[in-house]
Length: 602
Image (cartoon, rainbow, N blue to C red; front, side, top):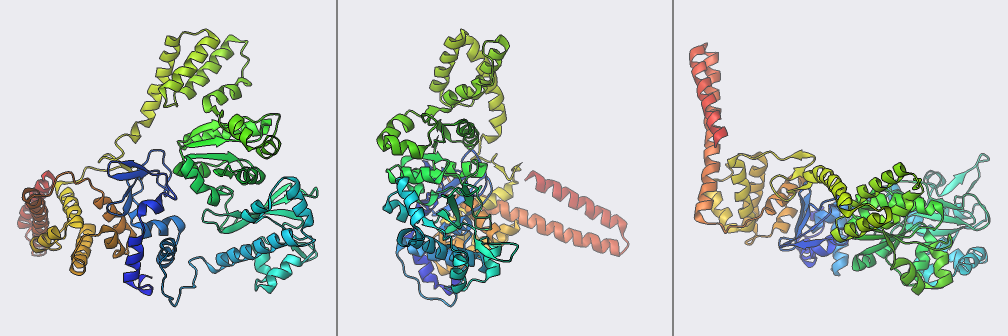
């Protein structure tokens, strides 16, 4: 792919982008020392093991092993081809790319590209019908009565699906889409009489966009007593309700800036809040919050305020969402609305300032909400039930990191149930001990004890560590590479290291200076690329000196020579066996055994 865009332009694009800026659009990064750490976007985790170095312009996950430069990251996170990743980065930095033979070829499959195109055409059609036609008047009146402004209608590209039979089918067929494709993709519904109708006929349309702003589905709201009240597009390769959040594309920058996300249940709640100036708002897509969505929010933000409807169903949903968010590592707060209202109607009645000051700002901590939530399950006039209730609250308190918050609620329990603080603290310590034992596996995540792919790394032999250390210095210093090339050549013992060092020799013949991010562009194999990122991230605390360099080279050379010597002995042993000389073969076998024992001691 890279050959289709001149290499000098690829390099210009790569250098124009700071990897931390791109990664921080997807991962909440925190600086620790010289690097940035966050939760890996490529696998589920609660403790950050994903590292980005601004100096080297690379990333590496100590958990799943993925690594690379800014191009690799974008290819992985967005499932893009190399060329499409370059196009994306070029557009961010304002660099014009030359036309290429396949510049118009999408990375998506033809069907998926057609689905995106059809959604784009339909969005424009529905929006036009809503704003400018008599057919859309019912939809526009509905939105006006809900207080939705013209600006919001434009921002969210709200629309209306026509009631005229065959209108949508005819429109899309004129755009070149086959009827069978439209039925298969869920745009049209086929009836027994072989007639088709728009899936969303007569509904107000809410385009559902992915996190980069592409419409991948629709939500349709009934306004004439149709059932169901809300209807979504059917799931597809591009649309999974469990993985998307409504308005995430517009809200993510506001979420990052405020370090807080507000989670709603419905489209109208989001639009009403966004219109009123509360823009760090997202909603689930007609389903309960999922583990995937919780982890997605955690990558961007520390605190999530759950603001669901005030009815019993909303309270139950708030509890389930809070559990998932806490498991993902978020600090959770729960906003409490009044009089069984939803956020949309509350903002309409009381205004955004009251919503901010009386609903969002005093949001309850999870423990406060939890205490009230579980009380309904216990008869607190019964001694046994009271004890069970207190034990459940203590179990949740053990999960709280803040000692101040823990003490605050322990005092509340102490006063409410006339139990001494010492007794409650003693019981809490038991829960903490169990919790710490369970979480012990997360310790030393950034050391040699890091758990990778569920298995503890084995201690590496001396020669293996020497090769890794030497490669790390070679990646940073062409002078070291020059010396190693003269003294070792490709005589490394680990096959992957042999390949990397060969690439390095070629790289420094073409480029004078070290550039790890550029070097990664030269390696096509993803496994090797990940290994280079891992080695490049090794902490090189000591300045390389003659002693360290000579020691590494000597250790590697000895191992290589031992391996060659054993290889030669094995050939002699085989020859002795062929010559029917078992005594000589046995002597050689003993010699091989001794040499292999010595190798293991090195």
